[in-house]
Length: 366
Image 1 (cartoon, one colour):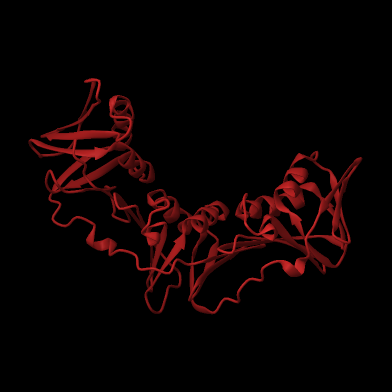
Image 2 (cartoon, rainbow, N blue to C red):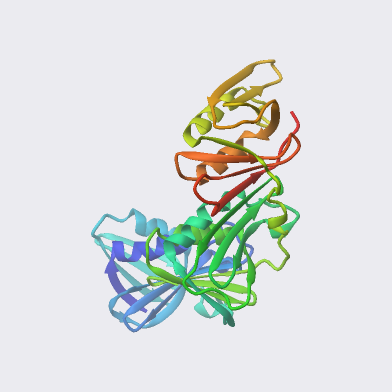
């Protein structure tokens, strides 16, 4: 195997796939990238047996072949080379020579035949939508995913696909984030698939905020997405996601309309004097006024008073400030709507104009 290509042409696909590689893997082969040269293109594959990324780029005058190369070392070498450098790769036995100008590196490789082969995807549904819309709903919800929860199905993002709608849903048991978007072509039969946390983060990283159409290939155990010389696939979590619609508070007849930025900056100031462990703040409501109050064990206090469009009187509820700040950051628009029922119920945050993005935060005792 032998090929030569500009540093920038090689660096881009390397950047796209290298994060999939686990830094500490029990299988040495999974610390490597699979490099395959076929005809006039080279493909780089990375996998951790759960998520797989394949990036391809063109090359000229190459000789065919394949090997696996240490992912991090190869990436760091190429990244450190000067701009505009021409990189030559040559495989001799189980050694890959990397040459650029007067620099030469030799990397120990492992046989390509030992690299785990990807399972063939038995596609049961194809969903088409705008790439920017998929990125948006992931960005607006993924922060609410659980981390290393024993309820394994919460350690991921639910994609709920219907005929003309796709919803992204995440929850860690203390808060819930729901965002929806229209799809060009949806599922003939409603599908609910749970994408694992790492797959969600990698998918969000490769997607761009454009109007290009993208296709989701849904299999029984996998999801695959293709775009511009890049193929992403991930195993799905085999579990049943909670009934998220039951969590959204019904009968929330008390409304508060308030400036999003004003509420966010007030929370950021008040939380300085909250309990560092629980980051609890209290929302107090009276007609035309909302107060954000925080205390800590040192008996220090912060009070932020804000103008708000509300007729609520004498209501006080405690919340984790971090959860509310995350929700406000995922919403857009100058104003947000807080929908409440009573002092013991959760709060629903949404944009004033529409309910495509909804966030539910559970109350906490203070």
